[in-house]
Length: 419
Ligand code: SF4
Image (cartoon, rainbow, N blue to C red; front, side, top):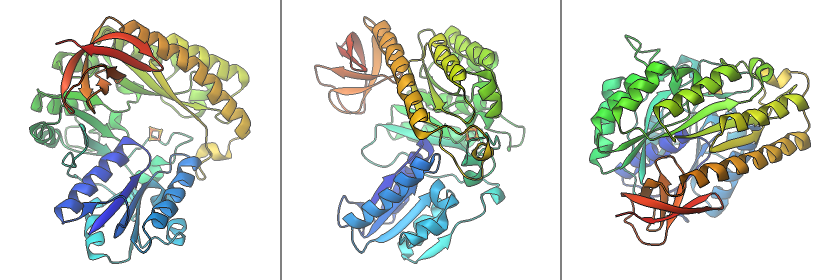
């Protein structure tokens, strides 16, 4: 049996697809670009645009694989199972229970199994890392979110925080390193809340330490972080490990205190800046990236100007800027001061100009440095700071090699092997 799969959205979705593929391959399935017996779309609902792209992907895979069993899972189908069923999906799952999904596919039984995410209490451990063709493995340590930020639909689709115990983080990291992965990405929906559901309430630093010490030969890359978790103790413990990638992706969302408050974020710009400074103290030269929402309801021109100035203050390496998207059922959907699509897109464009300048400045600062590059193909890969690096020579895919940076162009570092 052949399957075709398409994944939208975050690293957790990528991880869960990877795990589902592992389970399917263990059951004798093979991946195929065309003429698949089963098409699987792992959907995203983080913005209205993600929902639209999810529907588009379902229709596209169905068109490319006529007659295939259509399987849809993920956050969009968790939120809108009726819409997904109306598109002709045979199996509709939500964002949980991938083991049962693999079984349902094997049995090829049309099933509808969207559960209530708020009743989920147990972390669902999934296999990861065994799918060929990937150079870095993802280790999902947490699911769910209890924060209910005003704009976000994720807590409604993923349920409450559930965590993988530290000893299991260690075991999975050791297994992934044993499979030869040179980089392990620690991921989850809201990893800063890691452990609040576990006995003894371990924190994120405990999980990262367990994984890093169990896989000393691999480098450990942290997924998106809520800034509130980045304390002195957190930084000191991570820096002492020695195999943490000096790249931190922080969830900023706005650089204006009033907007942050209305977003129901748990920090202000002063606290956020202190986090950036702290990370730079413990990881000199580290790369800091962020997410930014442009055009949140009520964000005035002055608020947005403050945000642009704050991007410069933080000197990010890169910022993922996207327009605010109304998600029905969230607090922000009913807020006054909704901005036009054109205005939101114009703000994204203006943020992009600032981001391009910041990125060029960071890349220029790396010229002359030696970067440890994980090669995704013979000629390019990612540095530990998560910059794309291209070389003139050849390196073996999946290996980490030292590269001397000789220049930077179009958002990419250029260099040559240093050994
Ligand atoms: S922390 Fe906020 S933005 Fe992140 S998943 Fe939770 S509710 Fe959404």
